Amino acid sequence: MAQRLFSYWEHQTFLDTYDVVVVGGGIVGLTAAIFTRRLRPTARVCVLERDLLPNGASTKNAGFACFGSISELIEQEKKSGTATLLQVVQARWQGLGLLRELLGDEALRYEGVGGFELFRPDDAALARTCQEHIGYYNQLLAPIIGRADIFRDATACLPEFGFAGVEVVLENTAEGCLDTGRMMHRLLQLAWQEGVTVLHGCPVTALESRAADVRLETGLGPMLAGQVLLATNAFTTTFFPDLDVQAGRGQVLVTEPIPGLAVRGTFHYDKGYYYFRQVGNRLLLGGGRNLDFAAEATTEPGLTELVQNHLEQLLTDVILPGQRPRIDYRWSGVMAFGADLQPIIQPLAPGIYGALRCNGMGVAMGAGSGRRAAEMMNG
Image (tube, rainbow, N blue to C red; front, top):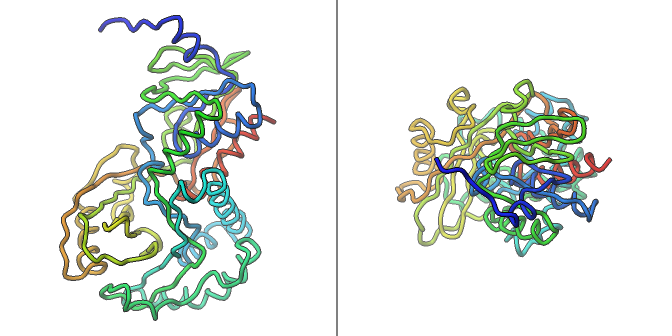
């Protein structure tokens, strides 16, 4: 293989020593870089993304601006306690607000369409439990969301949706949706406008903490930084394998255009393991990692027959009964989960920091996590 030789200009402009190098060009990484420049206007800041587009979930999510359905909140409160749940919901809500403030609703194509949780006959016990918790969570979350009518029973709306085999619908009136691609495009524009250098196709293969700096081995050769932030979510275990971070792959499909499609809202089913929404005149549907947690606990992109067949069955039996639309797009994205609901935003080694593990809520948690990471490195 021919040796890669860089010009003087490339070395001086792109490959010289940086004050901060952010590894990972997703929501967290880009917002961390943007806020680092705002806190330290003279700092040289670079974002390194190993692929042409982020390989986690930042460009591969469903575009849900959500903070939790009632069934999810019940599970999370059981797992982590009320105090932690409140902290995390506040971080999600404030993170969504920060993202909208940072990029603007027009750029995001944000729509406050509400989030709907569906319950089929087999879910009757869970539906009753969730219905019984409507008042509780409205009261509990009112100080965070700013109103007391967050959740409501929306079963009366069922006829307008046209679903089959759904008996109960609960609505989170404070949720919405956005355009994932436009969100990331605007974040990239803003990063460059703020003076951040963003280099795609540049994997980082090794890190070395040294007395005065951190040495990175990259696809462009060695680089030096005063500080390094790993905004690499599930991929962070490549460098720090002992972190409490478990990969969770999410598979998604999008149909062909469907004339007359009218499914306004964001929809959740089976404690949030399935989710769907209308995108233009197409139907987006994803989830199913609960069918085989072990197989989906991977950072490898890919699709499985088990999940894809189940998604298609849900599509034709429940969401669009009697219809069998062609599937035009299929993909997967990688999320990160852990025993703790809180993200990891902390030093990992001398000069090396981490901002990761949004527990499947990267759209809601990403901007806030990035800002917290910038503040941590500036402290």
